[in-house]
Image 1 (cartoon, rainbow, N blue to C red):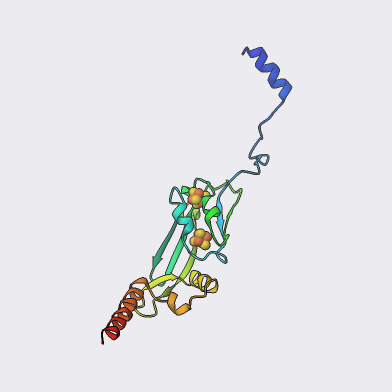
Image 2 (cartoon, helix red, strand yellow; image 1 turned 120 degrees about the vertical axis):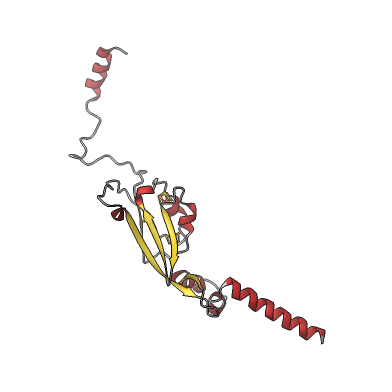
Length: 168
Ligand code: SF4
Ligand code: SF4
C-alpha cells in the first residue's frame, strides 16, 4: 500500500488509540485483570490452587494455620481459579496497574486456622472448610474431626472386634 493511501485512510479514520495514562484506557467487558479473594467467603479448600497453571496460588500449612497466597507477579489472568471456586470467593477484577517496588506488595494472603484430629492431634482440614462440609452433610462432625490415619485404625479395630465376636 502506498504512503498516500495509508495517509488517506489515517485521515479518514482519525485517532483510534488512547493517550493512556493521560486518558483512561479502553477496557473491554471481557478484560481480565488481577483476581481478588474475599477472606470472609474462602474455605481454604485449595481447588483454586490445583487449577492455577503458573502456580500463582499456593496453600501451605504451617503450625496451627494454613495460608492461601496469591502472587500476582505470576498470574496469567486466565480466571480459572474464579471458575472453580465453590465458595465464589474469587473475583476477577479489571485491575492491571500492578507495578510495585517490592515483591511483598505483589502478594496477598488469606490465613485459615487448621482443625486437628480429635484422636492424634494431627492437622486435618481448615476450620472454615470443616464448618462448611459439616453444615451441608448429614454425617456427624466427630467423623470429620478424625484424620484419615486414625479413621483407618478405628475401622480396622472395629472390624477385628466384629470378626472376634463372630468366631465365638
Ligand atoms: S474457597 Fe475458593 S478461594 Fe478459597 S481455597 Fe477454595 S477455591 Fe480457593
Ligand atoms: S487467574 Fe489464572 S493464573 Fe491467575 S491466579 Fe487465577 S488461575 Fe492462577
